[in-house]
Amino acid sequence: MKIAILTAGFQASSTALVASYLALGYSVDYYIQTDKRTPKEKLRSLEALELDLDTSIFWIKQIPLTHVRGIDFIKQKERLRIFCYRSAEFFDGSKTFLQKVMPPMLIYGLQILLLCRNYDYIGVIGQGSFISHLSLNLSKKKILHTHTFHEVFSHQSNELDSNVTQLVNAGVPLVVHSEYAKSRLEDLYKSKQIKVTAIPFGLFLGYSDFEKSDSIVLDRLKEKPYLLSYGFFSNYKGFDSIWKAYLILKQKMGDLPFKIVVAGSGHLEIIEEMKKYSDFIVINKWLSNDEISTLIYNSRAVLAPYHSASQSGLPQTCYVFDIPIVATRVGAFEEVIKNGENGLLINDSPEDLAQAMLTISNDKTIHSNIVGRRGLPNMFSWNVIGLQYMSMIRGLKTFEKSKL
Image (cartoon, rainbow, N blue to C red; front, side, top):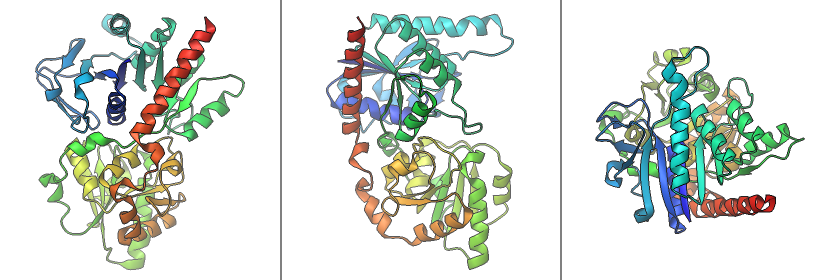
């Protein structure tokens, strides 16, 4: 079987999925969206993946595997080809001529390329308008493919993503990464039979190829063990809960036995307040893969007191380094985190978070459970996940033949 994977973001899970197809004996062409790059720029903004390009990407270009960092864990590389491609998002409101014609031209070119290469199955992965329109075009041409969404509902409004709506209405088979997201979609479309399959993430193994002792990061973290919260600063991630939990612990204990490291790009007022206190270490910048790996690997635990979530890949990143998580009982966290085994699940309250922070900083049982990833159920093995995808693909083939 010859497979194509096209991804717009979300390379951490996509690369591991590619590895699972290769392990099953299939050939894979892996297309990675890389936009707004200058000639000879080193790309460091991809999840668990880095590419060295010797030229700018005008449209599509094959990348030598020796120019890719984050794929050392893949054993069967002889059947793998990696390409970079350009995209252009669809703009609302006023547009220049180029903004009007570029997206459909690039989509048409990609579509023709994919048709000419005669893939048995195409997996499209991403959230934006460009990648979603590509799926729509593939559907119109009756090309066997699925579209994977990592975020189904908006964190801000809790409304269904407009691109999800468009693809559901067009009958495009969807993949989501939790039963939680699948059931919410099915509840929303009770009167319509939609094609949606829930297949979980496995571990984001590409992160294991990156540096775990970045000296610039570690020089700031020498004083005490630390609890970590990382990622783009957004209100839904519960930084306000971390702040309130800290105040509770500070009043109760005075001197804390750990530091709290908050790392990532973005701006929130509560983060600015944290910067004023010595118990916090705030690293307010875009994080490279080496920095992310170093921060997680050397932490005592990762904090995820989210106010909302759908199917976060945070556990699948942290478990690569045998690091437990404290998370709220929202979204799909309960499908991955087993309370007291590979992390702690709490209610969305600063009091619960404060107690969990204290517990996880001293706990030895959870840490010993998670070593060697024993805390992750077998259903999250990429071998199992690859077989789930194959079962779904065979089902779609049978369904399409039945309509002829």
